[in-house]
Figure (cartoon, rainbow, N blue to C red):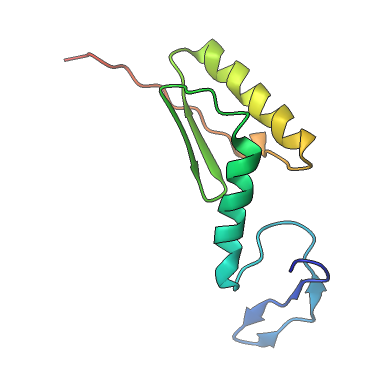
Length: 104
């Protein structure tokens, strides 16, 4: 499905020349998201360890551990696990948010 995939950029001035798509999820096919979810389910099965919350949503990952140290360890585990399957985790786009439970 992805072999030899090409796309164009469509603007009000017209379409660009076609170019090869080498990374990313192919847009436009109704099967793309379903296939991606099925593959990510299998790939991530061994990476998930039951933190209070681990959520895969499309191509985003949410991790909610109990400590900052646990979060760091989990990010390293996910990154190396995905790279072992020839996938990349963009840690440059990673955001960390702190939450304090139990405050009045």
